[in-house]
Amino acid sequence: MAIINRYEIEQIRSAISKQPVLLADGTPLPRLGQGTWNIGDDPSKRDEEIRTLRLGVELGMNLIDTAEMYGEGNSEQLVGEAIKGIRDEVFIVSKVYPHNAGLTRIATSCEASLRRLRTDRLDLYLLHWRGNVPLSETIEGMEKLVQEGKIARWGVSNLDTADMKELLRYDKGARCVTDQVLYHLASRGIEYDLLPLLREHRMPIMAYCPLAQAGSLRRGLVENKALQNIANKYNVTPYQLLLAWCTHEGDVIAIPKASSEEHVVDNAQAIFIDLSEEDIRSLDAEYAKPSRKMPLDMV
Image (cartoon, rainbow, N blue to C red; front, side, top):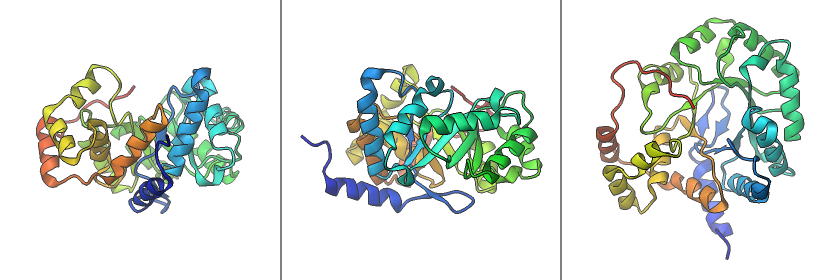
C-alpha cells in the first residue's frame, strides 16, 4: 500500500512552498529540510535511505544537509546517489572540517565533496565548527570558491555570539548567510544573544537535532504532559509538535533526519500545525526562555 498519494504530496509541497525562510540574498528555503548525520553508514539501509531522501524532496523538503565528516564521506556519497536526475530541484548544503578550512586545504575538501555528491557546485558550504584556522582565512577561502563557481554561498556552524561578532568585523564576513546550531525546545540558549544577533543581520539559523538527540532528553521531551496535551489537541505526534515549535517564528530552518519514508512524511506534515499564543505560553512555562548567557550546546 502506498505511504502517501500524489494529492497528499502536492498538498504538503504547496504548504511548504508558501512558508519559506528567506536568506539575506533573497533565496527562499523550506522551513523543513533533511539532515543526513549517520546516513550512508549501513549498506543494508542504503536503498531505503535513498528513497526517503527523494520522497522528502518530492514533499518540498528540498534542502539536504550533509558534511565531509559524516561517515567520512559516506553521507555525501549517498546524497549524491539520491539526487541523481533531480539535482536542480535540490539545495545542497555541506560542511568542511575546521582543519581543512584554511587556504591550503579548503578547495581540496570542497572538490572532494563535489565528487562524492556528483555535482559541480554546492548551494551552501559551511565551516563545521571553529578550529585553529583564522576566520579571516576561512572567509577568504570561501569567497574564492564562490568566485570559482564551486559554491553559491557560504556560512558557518556551531559558532557562538562572540565568534559571530568577530566574523562580522572582517571584510566580507557579512556575506555569511547562516549559522547552523543545535536548537530545540529543551535547548534554547541561543535565544538570549545569538539568535537576536543573527536576526539583526538577516541570517536565519539552521537548527540541527530539532527533536533533541535520542536518549533521556528526547524521552523527557515527548513525555512532557503539556507537550502531549497540545499534540493531542491538534491530533499530531509530539515529534511533529516539536518541529512546529522550532519553526513557528518563520526564520528558522529545521533539518531533522528521517530514517524511513513514513518518518519523512511525518516530518513534512508538521508544516500544517499552526501554534497559538496560548500553546507557546504553555510550552514556555515548561521550557523557559533563557534569562542569562548560556554555553552553546553542541553534539
